[in-house]
Length: 364
Image (cartoon, rainbow, N blue to C red; front, side, top):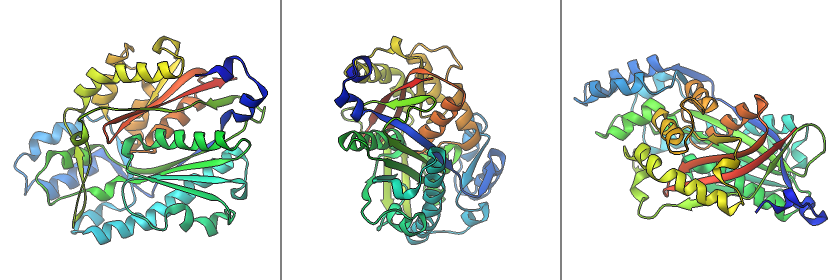
């Protein structure tokens, strides 16, 4: 419940958690959708007779460009798991450093001020994880608490923020840094005859986002984060996830997702909002992870939003593609910079199949 917003006590006020800073980061290689289509056609069309039937998916995806940790030429040669994960380790650390530094700069705080770090990623395996690899360069304290989280996929930005929020509330006055890093482009596969791999090529890009959480400062607008909520849909494991083999990660991305969102999303969101003492009518803005154009359209339809309402989501998808976990924070940053205030709800869908939601109150 949001009782501490309506009837603040000293104890509740001490446990109030706000967004102190937000930052995003992109890798160096920018690729237009036309360039991606040309390269995909050169690599895939000779092997897959169905490829030309999927060309409209590139043209209608709502993605103008995306960013990649690798140049287009890198994808011409075959790469196994070792190559892909080595690139993930190198590029992921760089993205972590950039996003974390941007969030700290936005908050005008130093890395040594951070008490806990939550690192979210699902597109590779890094042990030690990125916050440990970046510790020396970032100058994190030796006693900083580390919470790596794997496997949340596209829901990782919202669920990771929820985990960070709970940790901050449990230790009043502490600062928690959440960083989501994904290198989806490294999962490009030219060896599998699956439509999902082509659709992933249509949609996915690379990026990172970070959020610094802590007590309110009393300066300027206040972005208060409330308890996050999740809804795990039964019997939906095959909808989204990874296949893992010697070549690397292979995407599971079922064609039923937009229809599933149309049928199930509103009930799940309404239930999660009710747990927070809210109803859909209480929201001034739903802030969504844009899984794809069809998913955005399905969310607008099922939530009774006018077509085009989720403009920041479409703009983020257009400019960066679907970056998995960081994408929701890219959208949130855009919405906050546009001056949105009132009652928001940040939401995303990910493997499980899971809906994740976090109520956010923005006061001027």
